[in-house]
Length: 223
Length: 232
Image (cartoon, rainbow over all chains, first blue to last red):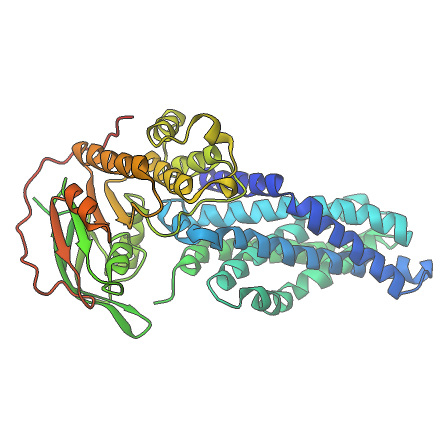
């Protein structure tokens, strides 16, 4: 399973390296979202600094939708989905590989967004360990849930519009937990954030487990 | 000896529509069987069924010893078959070599086997480093064929395999199919290019309206089974 996961993750990351979609489209989009939030909330640095946690994770969520859409668009072109089903790869390995590739892309985008939030919104980091733990747990949860719903929507004709509708409510706990945890890490009391980080870990583990078990069934065509 | 493909009254539904409405077919190991019939006769559906991609709703369907009415067994079957269909399953953003290496490794092929497959399909050299998005239709088909060869399937399922290939590509495809059969594989193909396909096939089965009604059922010829090994 892990060999298959590594194979899929390597392939997806190579596709992204060659196509440069993440660096040339998604990352600029993420920065643009931060700028628009800044403009919308007026250059009142006080409000921006206080809202920076929520704005950061909303931007991450938007980027995650793009990354997930992209991860399954490359599989739906030219019979890729059938080819994957015929490949003999373990479906759990495919799930973990795709989730890992999405998570790595999101992690890179989060670094860009974090720098943007510090520079543009004047956010102050007071709890770096909590910040990093939150990013790791939330990213794993976003990637796992996104991969699970991504394959669900990929078999449908209206997948581009359906995926956000399906996925955003599911990801609400990640948005809430990560925002609360970030608030504690950005100028708050770090100990207040760890329970929220625990929630994110539980979310990620749940979706990783469900995805590992259910991905094979979801890849099949409805009979 | 048990046939590689054994179908009796096999029915497959696409929605509520019976795309296969009772197929009787036996294919022995080492045979090359051509499916012919008008558009919509069920050739592609039958090939996808034999690949384990579509469920068989009724009847008996056993391919390489796997009962296709059982979803779990159908999934097990897939790693032993190679399907070259209208879609190629290639990633446009990857090079030819990346694609063949990925699909080969997915099936457990070594780097040597991947190189041999690329060489035997004429997609080595400069072509190997080209992005698939920049290939012509014929080069795409050759690359997809290389992916199939690298996987070393026991059952080749070829859906209109000659389409998009030039004369050299068609000759190459026929030669690779014969080589695979010589090494113990079995080939089931559909084609509208009947002259060429009939010359390649040992036997022709006609599909009409999702059935094989009217075809005599041959008794499968016993042939020794062995692991397919493809020479370059």
